[in-house]
Amino acid sequence: MRKLFSSLAISIMLVVTIVTIRVIEKPTNMLTWDVFGYYLYLPSHFIYNDPYLTNHAWLDEVMKKYEPSPTLYQLVDLPNGNRMIKYSSGMAVCYAPFFFIAHWVAPHLGYAADGFSLPYQVLLALGGIIWAIIGIFLLRRLLLYFFDDRITAIVLVLIVAGTNYLHLASIDGTLLTHNYLFTLYALLIILTIKWHDNPSWLVAIYTGLTFGIISLIRPSEAVAFMIPLLWLTGTKEALKLKFRILKTYPFHILVAGIIALSVGFIQFTYWKSITGEWLYYSYSNNPGEGFSFFPPFIIEFLVSFRKGWFIYTPLMIAAVTGIIVMLKKYRENTPAIIIFLILDLWIISAWTAWWYGGGSFSSRSIIPAYTLLAIPLGYLVKEVSISKLRIPAIITGIFLILLNLLQSWQFQHHIIDKERMTADYYFAIFGKLNVDKAKLDHLLLVDRGTETDETPKHIERYTGHTIFTFDIPADADTTIAYKLDANNPFSKGIDIPFNQLTHNDHVWIRTSAEVWIGRNYSGPYPMLVNSFHYKGEAYKYRGIALNDSTASKGGWNKMTYWYLTPEVRTKDDNLKIYIWQQSQNPVYVRNMKVEVFELKAPGLK
Image 1: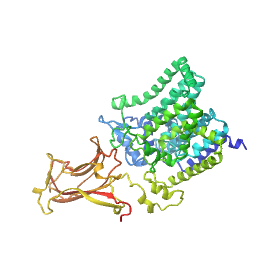
Image 2 (image 1 turned 30 degrees about the horizontal axis):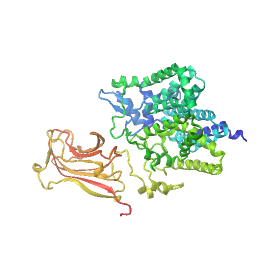
Image 3 (image 1 turned 45 degrees about the vertical axis):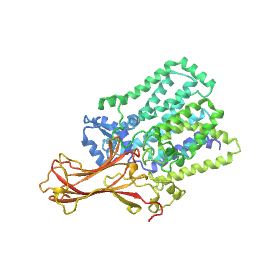
Image 4 (image 1 turned 30 degrees about the vertical axis):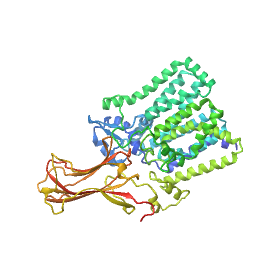
């Protein structure tokens, strides 16, 4: 009986669970969204011989046939005509063995060797599962350095079944960075322990290689350097040992650093070849997102009902609490855990879109840190298991596991919304398996679709008022209307900060105007433009233009456009609305009006 609940048996059971879920979920369309960008290095280099993505034909065909995402947001258009993948290349390195196997297998099975057909999808998904399996067994090995087999088994169940790791590894994130980083972090910590216990060149080399791949996958994960740097620094005795080891084996550190930099050189070379620069910030093409370090969004990241880590993965509160236990009795490695966790939280919560999109349950960005947080969680379990709180702790642990499984199911069945969660909606659906989501839609955040043509679905929830107008009588001739031409291409309009539009998180904007087009008009038609700006750079740039099928030449044309304000980067970001005459031919504008629609106060009809 004891063997049935050994850490090895538990590891096997958890692996079987993840594999079973992944098989049930039918991994037939895996290379989509961000994963498409991570992966694109491989087919562009090894199938299409187009590393700079200048040949649009093959990529357009892939987009049409496999529909990986609505737009190619994964790419950055460069001034030199090249198109750069905005993600670093670490994931492509991890995918590579399975890509090459799939590329060999595909034609033998009668599938297109195009990089995206079914064999590629399935084999890369298999690769992601293999990485997850290795990660679980590495975590077991890591925990056995600190705890007996019983505590190790309990912590394994808590980490895998009681957190969002289960959902990410088996369903939504098999090929995302976090699954691979989880495994690599476990390996890095094991190598750190082994090197401090018995320094060797081989372990130093592997440590540098592992850290290099971690940083190549996500440069922000270079914070993992804090783990080997601060290991064995929590007590005076440990610190003396640390300095003695470093003094004795300084060249181990040098070699590990050189190897890590050599791995990073893969990305530096790519940037240099495609942009002409050794370092390039690839996210600069979208001013609407970026880092905000002072201050970051730590409170939102932790406890927001939108996707707060402690809200949707409350078991990790116990892991953080375990650090207090370590500070009292097991201080050797607490500096590494505390400083890493603070820096990691600071960096991942500094991203302005701190919820990281809707593609995962709970906060996926911190999942790699679970391998390190498993250590304080284990110490907490160890202490509680011999205390009077043992029975309440067991009940709480079981409840948190069941809650995680239920909410993972709710997320997968769209009861927990991917991006629009609020506290009111959370409590309205708490514990429920069957929900009429349409009836509760008013409790959710506004629905922000990916479509360019936006129209409010529930305008009755809003109240509108006019913030801008310039009026010319409807019967006026063109001589007294507002003229736009090559010398004056932009109409009057508005330029207003978001914080003057509303104190809510969004408003709907309706802009209307009449434009007169001459009978012999030729060239591009005028466009009604809406866009937000961060430090002068435009984002969520939207507009409508007349065209040959809708334009009434020799007469007035009514233009009306709905625009939903974006998730603004700062409250000071400004909205601009105007009409842009793209042609040299003159047109005339009159009766332009901008209306703002804000949510009604609760209780108002």
